[in-house]
Image (tube, one colour):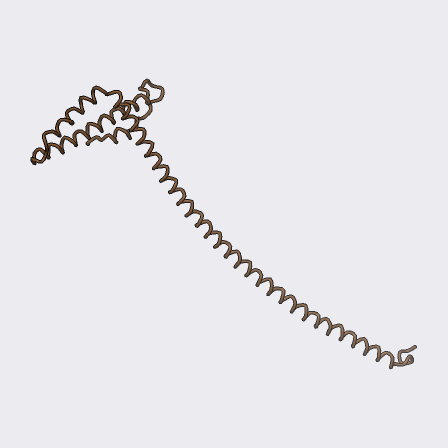
Length: 188
């Protein structure tokens, strides 16, 4: 498996608890330095391969080779400043990556929240329609029951009136019968 600078940057070590080990910050700092130097070496290697290819094809000028050879000498003489610059470059790159990742997560959270809001709104509207339908059915059932009770009351009043009028007629007839009967016929 080919190892790249990104593999070194993203490598995570397990923390050992209650045992002796290396300081994780010190390991991270050293790995950051390795990555910076490794990237420089890869870039220089790519440059040299390109120049070699151009020499082989006969298109390169001999003067172009001089700066490439001078660069490693200058880099080794000024290793501390290039290391610091590399660390700053790495820190800036990591910062930019974290900012981009944060923006991406923010957009994702906003998108998920919008979807959730729409789902909740749809559920609430559906629940409202169901409740309104249920209330409408209950209202219709109650109106039908009220209509039944009114009909029952009307029929009951009619029957009660008929019964009372019948009783009054019976009383009137008995009163007429007793008035027409003489006292002597009764035996008094």
